[in-house]
Image (cartoon, rainbow, N blue to C red; front, side, top):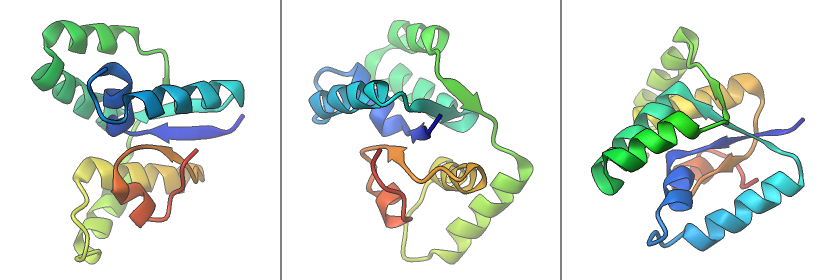
Length: 130
């Protein structure tokens, strides 16, 4: 089964009806389901999503999402973190967050080429849409 990494930007767009990408996110998720593509998060993305939801949509939404997410979670390894540091320290023209850089490393390790994201950094790094 094909997999796609789901970025925090997509999770947030799915949950916040006022987000500019909400309609696009719902349609994209429907297409992924129709094609039986497995959504995948990393443990760093889970932490980032929880923090963002807590700050913007409140503790109830953050807890509800955290306890109800059924998507697979891939743990970031020490090697992924080393690659993330290398990405950040060598791509001086970009402003990748540590979570994004670890996502790129995990995607490289798992040979995932597509990201469900509204964050332009994924495209800059060479990952396409799902």
